[in-house]
Image 1 (cartoon, rainbow, N blue to C red):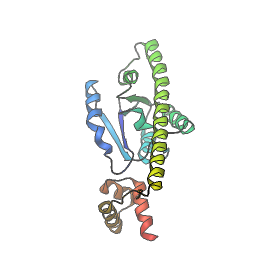
Image 2: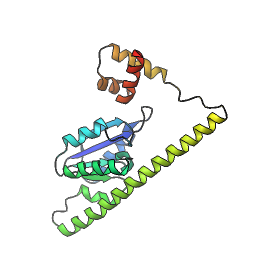
Image 3: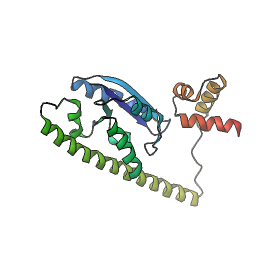
Image 4: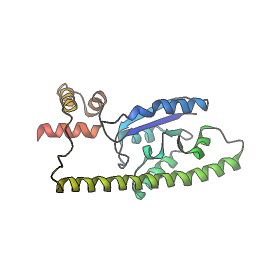
Length: 205
């Protein structure tokens, strides 16, 4: 069994590798090891995440897509989630999430009991879609609350915007000046490729 772990955090300030130990322990309790890891700092509301797309490109039928929770995989709108789910299904990937017990059967071989395997797969598919919908709703509610908070702060004259991480900007600029590409720079600086592009664009602005 080939297990591909996907670890995601929304911003460069967050640690996308935080769940690594939990995923490794989970795989170990099922007598398995994580064979490949895909790590990135990108919003789950984006469909075009480089490492997720690389995972889908690398995947083979029967592989396991292991995540800490479904919201690490998707906070996408309904249509975009449907497309991602179709891509996952077309690759024959089995989604396993630590916080979704019905998905854990994906870590075991159920070929000896086809009926049970199919029933569990159907139940898990429904719950995965439900969890993805909940993740999207949570994302939208948080964005709405943030927007309301910003509007209130502006009205009170207290809004100052998001502070710039000067150390990160300096590090990215140094790496770019040294001739590194976007992805290597993001890896060495510990941020997303989107952040690198924004800093690069600010240099030429």
